[in-house]
Length: 318
Image 1 (cartoon, rainbow, N blue to C red):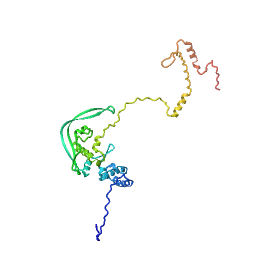
Image 2 (image 1 turned 135 degrees about the vertical axis):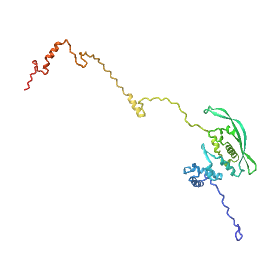
Image 3 (image 1 turned 60 degrees about the vertical axis):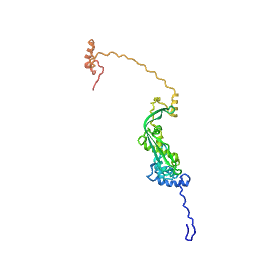
Image 4 (image 1 turned 90 degrees about the horizontal axis):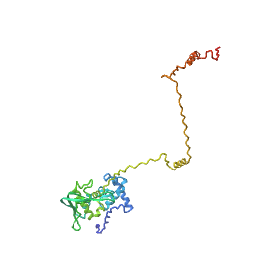
């Protein structure tokens, strides 16, 4: 630029924008926390990034976005955690490959190979004694190959071919909840694009697999506890001492001399005398031979209160 007087003036070039690497220095770490505070307070990001308690997740997502030179929201929306490991969504990998500028848009070459019989090796049994068996199944085999043109050289690059037979042999097809049986064409393109990106642009994926791959490789484990046989219950002796003090008290009690048992008392057998004859009401029946006794009782009947002649009690009421 020149001034009205014709003098050249050099303009200061704008400083190039430097992406923040969150973990490079304390200053960048503090700046990253300020940026993440706005992200964690938004309800547009997934739940795993919302709130101050998820500040660490947001910092990692911000660091990955800076390295890939993409907005942080794209990382947060397309990064899934499966079995404790982060994994990319398959559609994100295709978008990243198309936007990186290294290749032409990704294209797919598909072929229908018709009905085929494929085999799969299954392992059964506990660890240390596992046994293998070959399971055969008949499928409609299809294959798909992802390819693109490298802009720097003009060469057509092709990724590994993925087929339904491969999905069966690797155990992806018949896995519980697998999408291979319901969306096999889409799964073929997703998997072939992931193979292409891992082979020709590993720096874009940061060494991470796709969410579909993580689900296919995750081992499904039965966490239901096995029923244990009922153990025999041994009854504890009654009065068993518990604790040190109880044991000492029990030992002292055992040392005391035991009292001798008293001899049992003798049993005296008594023979009841014969009762005189009586009727049903308990009245004693008189004996016919006891005539004198009856006469005496009749003679003394009037002398119940001692007023007879033989009475020695001279009672004088005056």
